[in-house]
Image (tube, rainbow, N blue to C red; front, top):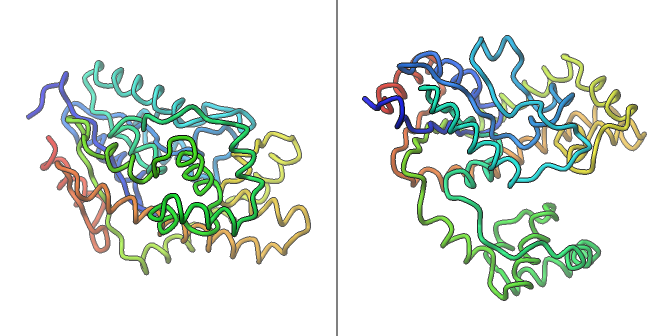
Length: 309
């Protein structure tokens, strides 16, 4: 049994729509001494973007304290560094209260940063980034393939943001970003425990389609319409899956049915990208990986409590 002052951070990871919220809430209840949840989702930080980001409602939270939700206006900048400082401070405070910190992963880059720290790279070069953003997409991909073949292989052709970041790093340092990340990935925080949800692709895709349908029924279109009308969205928040597609519809560029189908496609693509991250986490020590299909939340939580406490 761990003492209250040395309780590890339990990190719950898994694909979008995989049931992480429900499991983390029940885990917080079941752990000896109790736990508190800390969001690791880059979009759930924004106020007013609740339906499309699946921000847990008060009912979903079930009386368990949740942190780093609804803390930033959607037109304000928010970075990985901002989150890491806030999360590290919050987790220390939770542990000082004698509770278990439960980090609930939605953005796996955030989880990676918590587990391994930030990659020590050069300061952003805004002029260079502007030059890269203005490049022809084919030229951008060709240069990335020359300078960092592994990044070109991993990064989806439509993911311009990550391609620009990788090429910016390569130009500034003369070193492929992927090579630097290999060194970055060597040492995990000693206190972390990983609870991974391992959904088969076909089943998680069904859950994603059902979630999008539920979001639309819950008023996602009205949520987006109100955010646009009040001019509350910034470039980063407006690019979120669900919001970007419905903005296209509100601008008359596609039908509502087409927008909803694109939300499903983009979310399934996100889940595929998440599976790549999850393969990295699978090799870490002190992990419990569970296939949730056919198991109740209580079954999964009981396994985790036995493994971690």
